[in-house]
Image 1 (cartoon, one colour):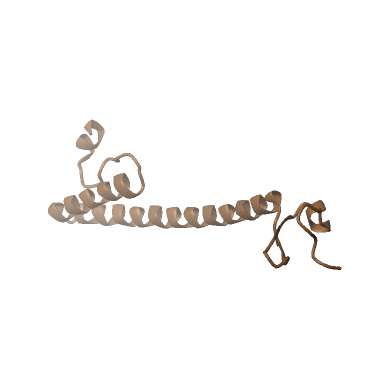
Image 2 (cartoon, one colour):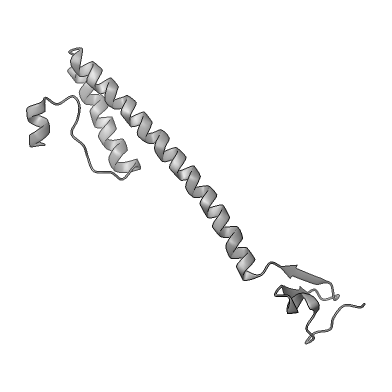
Length: 114
């Protein structure tokens, strides 16, 4: 069977595949829109799992940083605890796009007021 001529409908076109022909008559096929959409949805689901994995890791790291801030505040190393708190606030605001939380290095009376 020879290559279909321009203007004719091939079996692949009837099955829903989009066909294009090169100048020498070679038929190229591409997936249908629904197949492409399905493929993109699967890729998006995979990427969303990756995003969630990184988000969880970032939250865990912030919890560890909170513990360190509390430890240094309790060890009378307030300057170090304040420096870490500033870094923590920057990370939450800039990278995680979260509101500022009360800082573990602040006394309870300042946490409620802030």
